[in-house]
Length: 148
Image (cartoon, rainbow, N blue to C red; front, top):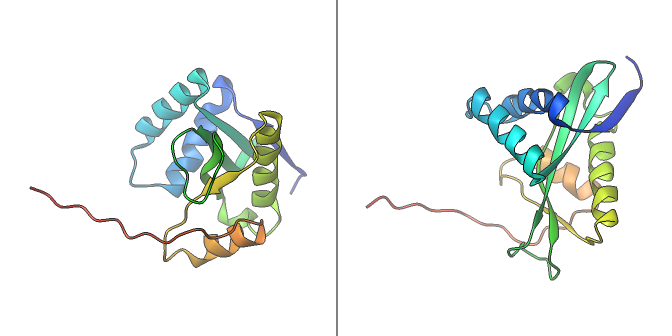
C-alpha cells in the first residue's frame, strides 16, 4: 500500500466521491449521487475530501456549513459532517481521522469553531469513531412519520 494522500474534491474527481457515497448509502441510485455531488461542488454547498492510495479513492468525507440549528451548537454557522466512509480494507489505519482533521482545518480557515454530526442509534462502530475524535454526544432522537 502506498502512502495515503488527502485531497480536496473538484469537478474532475467528483465521480470518485459518488462511488464511495454509493458504497456507504447503496439505497441511493449512483446517478443521483453523481449529480448531487457535482451540483454541490459547483455551488460550493458541500466540501469534500478524498483519501487516495495512488489513483484509487479509498475514503471520503463531506462537510457543509449549516446556518440552521445544529443539535448542541450555540454558534452559526456550524460545520456538519454529512458523511464519512473508508473502504473496509483501509479501515483502522487513521484515514478517517485524517479526513476529519482536513475538514476541521478547513472549517477553522472559515472561522467556524464547531462541527456536528449524526450517527444511527445502532451504529456503535461509528459512535466509537466519533467519540475517539472528540465528538461529544448531545442528544438521541427517534424519528417518526405518519402517512395521511
